[in-house]
Image 1 (spheres, rainbow, N blue to C red):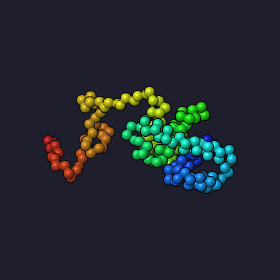
Image 2: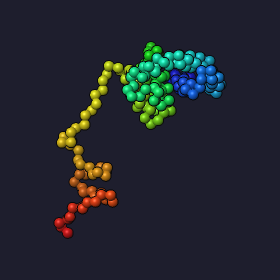
Image 3: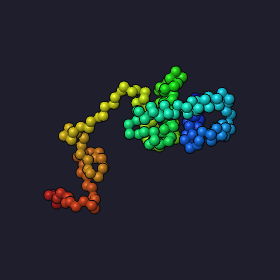
Image 4: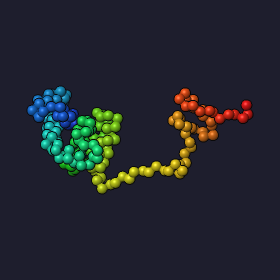
Length: 185
């Protein structure tokens, strides 16, 4: 079994633990492993060991996440995103030698995209980027002032004007205005 598959199984077990007590998880683990076809003993041991280690470090992982994620404490996070983040932060903090930073982040983003919402990948990537590069500060891009903008005017309807020399007439029954009169008629 490849590491990616092992990581996905660990993710699923961690996610299940969000909805089951520790006592129930013992039985759930046995049932989960029974459903995996062609599971080798070494894979089962690796998955079990890493799952238990992450569960034993959940408080520390959550503290790290709460310290880095402004406005998104673990109690507010989507359970899929939180589970992916716990797994990735564990790899970043406790398996630095075995799992390169880029691999841990990429695998976490892929899990988030696969199991989470449309925004999960970006959210997970942002949090893990802050953890991996705590000293890097990202400056907010300032939008140019209205007088400095070089783009052509757009009608308020939201349509883009491909050729600014063309005239577009937008009809909206809620707007009461007169169209300019054509002097040639």
